[in-house]
Amino acid sequence: MTPLSELAQGQQYPTAALYVVATPIGNVADITLRALHVLGLVDRIAAEDTRNTGQLLARYGISKPLIAVHQHNERAAAQRIVEHLQAGERVAYVSDAGTPGISDPGAKLVDAVREAGLAVIPLPGASALATALSAAGDWVATFSFLGFLPPKAKARAAMLQTLAGHPHAMVFYEAPHRIVETVQALADALGGERRLLIARELTKLHEALHCGTLAEAPTWLAADPNRQRGEFVLVVEGAQQEAAGEHDHDGLLSILLEELTVSSAAKVAAAITGTSRNALYTRALALKKDED
Ligand code: SAM
Image (tube, rainbow, N blue to C red):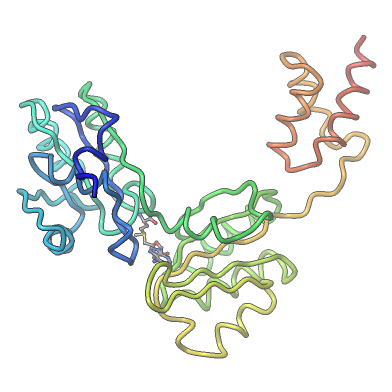
């Protein structure tokens, strides 16, 4: 078998750099070879939960000094890490599971390191977001990641109201104690007809993916209490867009046509609005002709 150090080559691993390293979201075998190489190479590892990360590292026979960097001390701990980097060290950052910075600490540390003029090097790997999307299907071709919805019913309903017309699929994270009320709130705010993918316990023993509609999801969850346990990603279909009428997107197209060709303006407007590119192309062409 090719040694790890050789497989991980093809990139330099400079000193005075922060390595942002993704870790598994359940199945420990989902650690990457590069992650293992870098975790073995760095001078110290900053972790959201040093006990949890200590256990992960022990599985791979890696032992390093650990620094706790979590939601409540991220700014202060970031300064300590910057000092280690300025002294010429390599430091890795790992969150509890998945990719740091995605509904996890890490972003403030990245800001502090970059503000100090030091390098930030990301190591890709598991994320519940990408894992769920990879098994969703063509209807999530464009999507927005919203993370956790507000826990309070009023704030959650208000936020969902603002998302009702959002034309792209929406990805949410949810915890087991709120899954039932969140799915019901999604159905109440967005209507029952939209598709919903419930991705539960991804990469774990009790992994389950259920793709149905918002209307039938509460019944599916209620049918077996086990379906309400574990960690969840919810992917909801975006709002259906009506075909572009005569004047639907004229304002947007006019602005875009000041800088872009008809074809590019239609492409950008389609990405922004979710409306068919062909319909927007026809409308952009008409606007251009009116102008000429
Ligand atoms: N940074 C992580 C990532 O890259 O996915 C997310 C961390 S966030 C604190 C934890 C949430 O992510 C969970 O509440 C759940 O919504 C989602 N999640 C994490 N692991 C998961 C899994 N194995 N299956 C389904 N959802 C998961």
